[in-house]
Image (tube, rainbow, N blue to C red; front, side):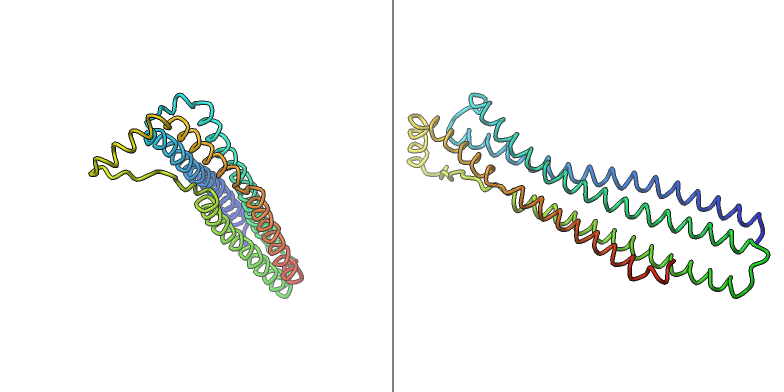
Length: 243
């Protein structure tokens, strides 16, 4: 293969590298925005729920600002603890993909150097070509595994947020068409509204305190360990053929 073709191959690999870098940045932005949108929607839902509770008891949530903000902060902090663990898993996956793609390029460049050697014989060429094929298959398997793992961890994240962080409301349904029901509700609020609203807020605080983020984080870490183990197994199984 001529030097001109060799230079063209290197330029092509550089262009691919630049495209992959841009793609990785775009994917990272999408990942962050999607994750943060999920979190923001949960926080917004809880915030609105606490305000609806205030309206139910004819109270102003502004009068309970410290307690409301404390509840929101606890909820938000727990959400971001889970998100931070997901982000670490995402970075781990992207690092593996980056390493695999880099190694593919190195293998192709090394192969190019060998076949440019005028003294290489046909037997050596065939052997080196087979090794390159094996290496490409290895790195393709790693990249595919990483992509699958990312899809799994993103789905698990959404499931955990939607399940473990689901806050059931305690709103009371008042029959607006029943005048006696409305009067009764208004009288109760007149005498007990403040106490009932504060009790409702404390109830939400208790529900949030019970969210077991440690268990969720441990599950994510176990997934990461399992993923790393699978990657090592893929490398070990293909090591003899790929080196």
